[in-house]
Amino acid sequence: MDESITEKAILTAVDELSDELIAFRRDLHAHPELGFAEHRTTTKIIERLFGFDDHASVEPSAELVRSLASIAAQIDEFEGGFLASPRRQAISATEGAAIRLLAGEEPHDLLELLAGTGDALLPLEVLWRLVGDDSVPEAVKKQAVAASKKAAETLTPSILANLRARDEADTSERVHFMINFVRECGDAEALRSSIEAGVASGEFSLEDVAARFVHFSYPIGVPHPQPSGAGFSGGEFTDLTGRPARSQDTTHDMSWNADSWKARREFAAIYIGEDGVTGEA
Image (cartoon, rainbow, N blue to C red):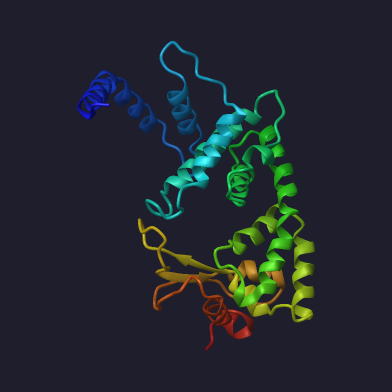
């Protein structure tokens, strides 16, 4: 196809739609929403993409939810910056479409809708948002809570397998998120007991567990970056293990290798135990 013709057609279309697009932008700006809770914004964008002028906007479909989830799964978390990453925006769009779909009369299996993206944790991210968002309709939230409990049942074996592998475990596995998902949505007591048993039997150490609660900050807009700083979720670690610890906000006074469990374990050890709680050396 002649590129000049294509470019001319695009410019013509943009010119014809300019007034409409400006009005659309102004409408969004007139109805601001909290970050990661942009339900009206998401709905308006979906309506804009799938319904125009005198054509009725298509009803949210299972296929739309699957498509949006697949798009999110293919986007690098750090592409465009962590907080405003296209991945998070795509997850927000998936959440919005799922809310509209589940609010309908026809029943849907939420886990089945979100599965098959190649990203095992993406369904959990969407469910986490649905469960924690107070603006989600009660009927939808009940479905999300039920799906979350079912999903949480599959996570404990994966968490324990990662811990048993110790320093050989895959550092890309988001064990911290998995643990918190089970704590909030699943059988937290069973997970706690399993971890206690693993520590008692020597399968892994308390410090190995603590290493999974180290979190990183990253440079904005850098694909596949190394961390620029690290912190420790001591309160969450204490809640899971009963071992005293203190939390540490991100510190940037050292270089980091995100692929090293040993480095995470040594960093976390500073903050666990009575010394860690009091902040003494």
